[in-house]
Length: 316
Image (cartoon, rainbow, N blue to C red; front, side, top):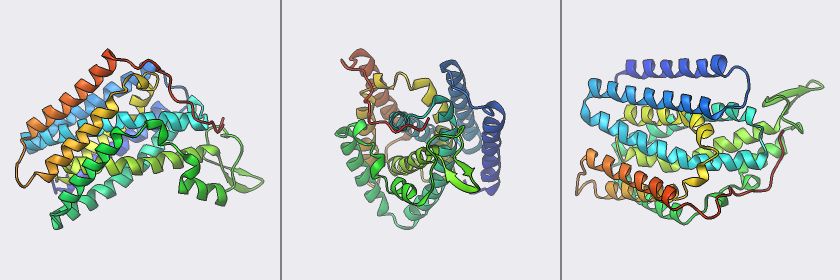
């Protein structure tokens, strides 16, 4: 979809929702309860599906199927990424009332970065067809690597180059200072430890995008479909975090299901010039893998359901 009006209207609508979220519904910092999180999560999912219906009437069944498949993949990868956010907040001991603010601004940054990645990715694929083979091989490699990587081994804030740079170049307060990212002390600007957490969340999303964007580009080459499916999946991420944070450890097989999905999407890309898979079949495969991994997690729970406890850096 190249019509600039759709892009302008969509982004204006998203900015309006984000403004209402930050300055009206979550104007005061508070601990997000499970009931509130579930209601917001249901709202974002319903809005995404409503938009999917709009895509069906405006663009046809093909693009609508692409949007739904891309949204499902991005949403599923986001659920797996929530585990890393739990570890980040646990490592820095971020008070619950500040977690929503960090996730909000983290997702704003993610929307900008992913928008750039998507436009660049679509342009490169359109100009250099062989890139789809590189993306396909990369997804297969990433999926295989994910299957053999423990989630709690992925968090090393002290090794993050941005964290190291910020720690050396910026003045920091010892406490969160009322949930602010910056504050002035004796006329000098100081960053708070919450700013370090935000840097960690933003830089982590760059790694997430390296997995998710190629996977979505394997589903659709339409930048509008790829972008909007990413946006809707990210917008519901905060609510989903607070709804699932306490039970994420139950879905221990989801990690393997997602790795299999990445391998499947990668193979689909590599074989795209030989065999064109119907999008409905691709959607069924993705949904089937997710369903099996979730059901298996519930039927065969881990004996030790304790979340890993990394060394803590207090920002309270």
